[in-house]
Length: 111
Image 1: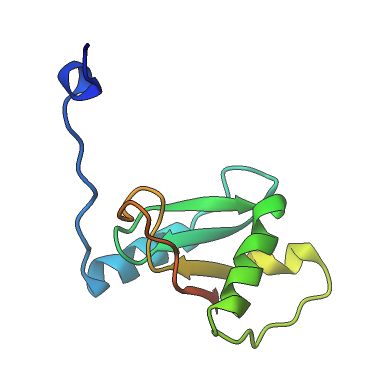
Image 2: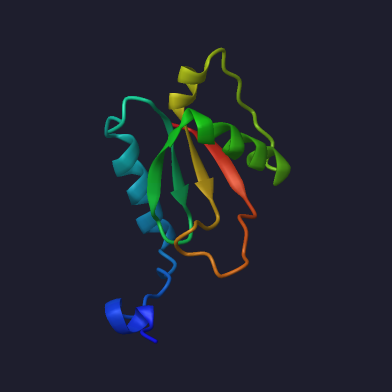
């Protein structure tokens, strides 16, 4: 039987980045326009620094997780487009989390 590692090599989770590098990633990303016109926000991983644009169908999951992880939202908005003024930070992501690990914190911050 051929193993995946034999074909493409072994992979590792990304290393934790420094707070300075993380802040730099956020500053650069939020200064750019969204690539997808339907994007509502961006979500950043505090552990590895990867980020992506968030579409409407995913944003409600992030908001619910933010509330569930005891990070109160001091945010109000009248329509979904106003959420473009905010971004999310998670403590890990699908790329860097360990097997069986879950997101423990999600924060929502104003740009």
